[in-house]
Length: 179
Ligand SMILES: [Zn+2]
Image (cartoon, rainbow, N blue to C red; front, side):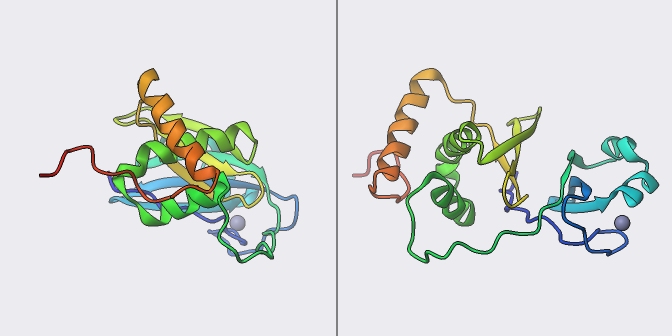
């Protein structure tokens, strides 16, 4: 499966193009269309016109949820690269390196605990897919669950902790010994 990009929330209904009002209920639909992740944000009227909860049963639909629309927050004033969990995860999502899948998962779980992320659902599959929404920006993050064993979790957590304390955020060295 290809890696999924972060999906920003629309500022207008994907169907009727009407801009959302603050606090308006909007319905988010994430779908896989021929390997491409597609996000739609629908107003209540268009959601109901498309079948409401029946949308979930459509071919390719990965997840749906509803939330209150919030206008996007202005970008943070600090342009310096930060070493907090969210900044590191965003850079990893942009890099799309397969060897960082475990660290991306650990960072996402940390952000869920800090309530930066809302867990929307976990899709079964191989691997299982965790669907998160950023609580402040409404962006969707799809994180495959690497199904770490307990002894692996500790090692990945140590790597992530080193990144958070300003260590080298570079990807881990390959485990195969080179000659
Ligand atoms: Zn609409």
